[in-house]
Length: 261
Image (cartoon, rainbow, N blue to C red; front, side, top):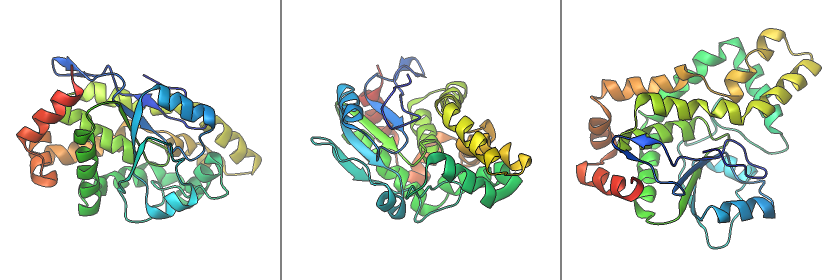
């Protein structure tokens, strides 16, 4: 369910997603973009959603440029998925709007941006640093017994999208439902994508590059499909979780009991 939170985009409660013969509980897990620009009203909105934990997937340079708003009574956990800034996945928010960041990525990566971004998803589920980051994320999910845990990266779509796939697969969600949630990002980012396109044209950016903006500010199935392919090559989600993340059957049972109804 999409949540409107002031000064944040791509925010939604994962509750209601079917996982096998059960359903993910409402008010327990929220995915989001970063929350560095929250107003008092935005903080109030999150607290009304019973927020208890914030998990930050960003690298140290990103956090330094746009630190999260620290909310009294809410536990804040750094859980970096990338060691350093990575063009296409990371965003340094210092003195740049979302639209400016997106245009910068497009001009840097060029018209091959879709293939570039898809390739960047591979190390998210194969690189030891990234995999360990997602294992830490799972530990924090398991520890959170009540209230909502919010996790975010910069735009809330790539690192968060991959973490969401791993989490939902672990709970038994179907491929179709996982893809449906992943693609909701485009609805959340629609307005900022339009603004970026308008600004790019005002700047005189070549039209082939302008047409790539939705692929940077939004998502396409091909990106996350890479994650499914890696997991399939590893023998499926349970084997991937056990062999790559050290998550066994008992761990999964506890996670499912915590989040499913």
